[in-house]
Image (tube, rainbow, N blue to C red; front, side, top):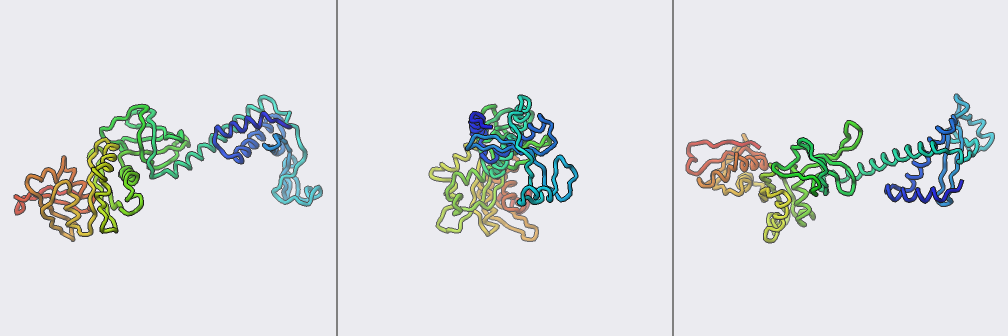
Length: 358
């Protein structure tokens, strides 16, 4: 049967669904085969061949070539098949006859449409899922579609995939308004209870900050500056240790940028979150002193066995070194992986300060 209109409609659907022609044709053939068998009640295999270049639809009834026949309506022995043509082998389709496509009724067409659309939806979903798996660990643009309880649901731009940002992946104090456009970090892609893929996104993880710096700082993107470690309390402060094999390169200055432009862009994206960029150092005493930034440590004493350090700071810088609710020294401890005890200079000889573990 020749049907130019059918294939023109097929091409339009192919463009709309953005799937390959080969996949589309094979899906159509499978869907039409299912509908044809349901409509005619045939107990034989049905093979439908679509030829887009000639606009033809051909329908064939076939039996599987087997060693031992158990179902004569669906199977034929290798011996009998080779009586017709020597080319047949086990597993081949033995074409019994060509059937008329005109047997299709409206019901068959509707059945075919349902099967085809389901398979196309599944294929599109698999394509998008594959694309999102490739974006794992990347930053994508998303539109906030709804906020339910503590969860924010977003639509990943360009994919129609839904992303879920759980409470612990949200920046504390940040507002999430419906239809607002935001950047999110793709943490993982997983299947839900219903079998649909779910994209888990975040704005609170350290990976989000890392990717922002990689996008903003060419020296990090090229590998000239390396991020050694990032620790973060989202919405409040991030500490990031960086280094470079090039002694002439100012790795901290590269991250800050001219007149602070680069780091200011990132701080703006993080809604004002403070960021301390620290040059990594193999000397642990020096590294701990730097990690307490913005406070300046006068001296750092270390205990290698207990992996514990005591940092001495000026009296008027004690609160700055410790930070609000101990946040600064807590992040410094996490960045260095050392216990840090902060003491004011006036009390070096007696009073022990609070200890924070990384």
